[in-house]
Amino acid sequence: MNEEQLLEFLYLAPIALIQFDEDGNVKMANPRIAQLFNRYAPGGYFANFFDFLEDVLPELREKIKAYDSPSGQLMENSRFCINAPTESGPSADSEELWLDVTITRPEQSTFIASLNNVTNQVRAEAERYVAEQKMTQVLESVSKNIIFTMSKDGVIDSWNKTGDTYLMDSHAAVGKLLSQVLDISVPKNAELLKTAKAQGAIKEQIMLSAKNGQKYHSNIYISSIHDQRERHCGYSVVITLTDTSHQL
Amino acid sequence: MNFKSISTNELNKASSSDFNAANFGVVKMDHKGTVIDYNDNQAKHTGMSKGAVMGKHFFTQVAPCTNNFLVAQKFEKESTLDSALAYTFTIKMAPTPVSLRLLKDPSAQYLLCDW
Image (cartoon, rainbow over all chains, first blue to last red; front, side, top):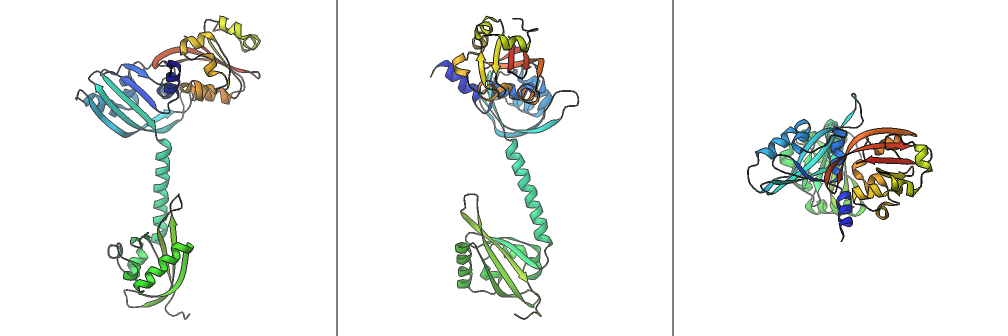
C-alpha cells in the first residue's frame, strides 16, 4: 500500500475522525469532519475542536475536559443531537443531526474521536415508536375483540384491555399458554399453533367462558408473525366475541 | 490565469497545459460531477494524482468534505454559477484553509482552489 492509497482510504472513510490534544487543538481530521464543520462556520478554520463544541455541543466538551485519566476510553457510542444548518443565510433552516460519539485517549496529550451519523437510525426508531403508540391506541379501543400476541413457543406476551374485561388481567395472562386462558385442551392448543405456523393463519370457532360467567360464541384468528428475514417469531391472536344470543 | 477574475468562458477554452500553468488548483467536471480534468497545482496540494481522480465523482469519491449545501448542492441546484467562498479542507488530514470559486455554465463546471 502506498501513501496515495492510504490517503484515499482515509479520505473516503464513511465516518468522521478527529485527533486533538488536551487543549482541543486539532492535530488531524478527515474530510467527513470538514463536511460537517464547514456547515457551521463556512470557511471557518476549525483549528480547535473545543471552540467548535462550545457553540454546538458544550456538554460533550465538558465531558472531555472532565476526563482526568491519562489514557483510556471516555465514551463509546454516546449519542448526541446537534442542529445543523441546511443552507446559507441568516434565516437558514436546520435539521437534527444525531451522532454516536466514541472517544479514546491513547496518551495524556492525545484524544481520538469518531463521530458516526446515525440520524437515519434515530428517525427509524422514532417512527417505530410512534407506530407502536398508534397500534396500542387501536388495540385498546376495540371493545369486542380480545387481542394479544404470543412468542414462537406459544407463550402469551401481550394482552389488551378487552382481554382484561372478559377473561383476566394482563398480569395473569402474560406468561400463560392458550390452553390456560381459554377452554381448549393442551393437544388442541398445540394443533392450533402448528396449523397457524404451517399455513400462516387459522380461524376457528370456540366457546369463550368469560370471567362474568357468561359464554360467548367466538371466532379465534391466529396468525403467524415473521421477522424481516421471514423467520417465524411468534403469533398474533384476535378473538372476536359474538353475542351469547346468536346461534351458530 | 487569474484566480479571482477568470471566467467560465476562458476556462472552457483552456487546455490541460493551460490549467497546469495556473498557480491555483483547477478541477473541471461534467454536470454530473465527474472529474474530466485536474491540474498539477491541485494534485500537488491534495496529494492525489490526476490519474487517481480522473473519471471519479468529485464530491463523493475525491473530496467528500465538499459534499454539502455549500459546494456540491450548489452545483446541483444552479444552472449557472459564479460564486466564491472561504472553506477548510482536510488535506493529508490537516485542516487547511482555502479560497474556492465555484463556476458553472452549460458546458462544464469548475472548482478553483486558491491555497
